[in-house]
Length: 416
Image 1 (spheres, rainbow, N blue to C red):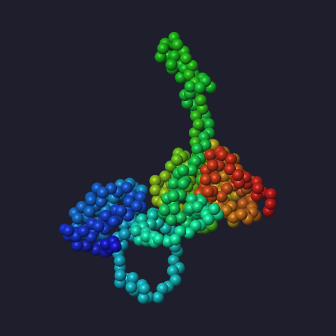
Image 2: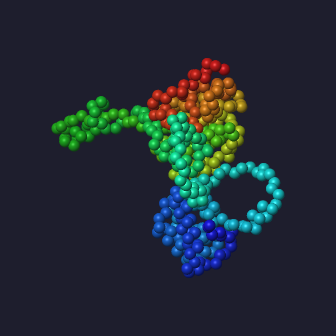
Image 3: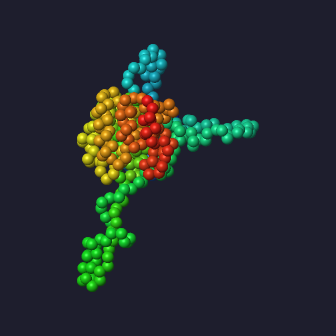
């Protein structure tokens, strides 16, 4: 059991020589941080114990600062350390717990706070020893026909990202990194030197001729450069879409590490640019920063007005060089659909491909009956679902230019 520290401002007795309980707890705390993802070696553990002995363990904040100066080496590890310190070195407060147990419990009508960054990983790392299964006893062998059962990998591919534990999320990230991420290229108007005789480079030819005084003139060649087109993501964060957008942000974080120009915008009642926040190395901290800067998360939605703001303020900046746009929304527009149709038409004309990701497609009986959905269908190139690893794999294949069935939006335009 971890040693409990008093609240802020309380003074603890200094570390006595030969008292190894606090040192053992520091070792166990470092082991928890290592399991949660921090890179901590034996030398850092010894330095932390020595630092705790030197400061005399005064206030709680002083003890936290001493451990933080030793264990935290990267900025993205700060949120993980804060959450681990809060859980591991929390005060026991036995009297308060007894009073709470004997007091009547009133219904909790307070607004639920969003989960802390790295809370799931710290909890799994801290209680891994407690949840370790007991040794299996000798039991008679039972033959099971597994031909019609699903493997663990197949179950993971169909599991919702929001319902995964820390271990399953780690496996999902490995699966995302193993995917063939979209690496499609477009031809730029700029040139680069080439050995293939396609286009003669006059400037390079004359420069080489001047080196020899014009006695020997050898032609130099050039070809068009190929670049990755920009990827622009417009994600709906309204009450009906916040869960799916948070799932997709993890895939975007993995995509940002592999691709250079990825622009992410979130919209509910207004448009927010979160491209800089998504560049954080830690995926949980990146999503947490997006939640902090957006004020209308899980609120209302104005799809047409938000897309109009994007067309007016950002389209000329980010939709150049054959950009691909991913629009994540359910299409349930409450305002006038004429504004939405006009904004979709301009957005479709400004980009090379417009892919609509609608989570409602995971239902087999989906039909385009809503006015907003029918107004958007005429201006998109593909319509796909994205809520698990299997759907993300299909999306990555489609972005890479490979033919994947099920993305034609015209199949919903025929019926009501």
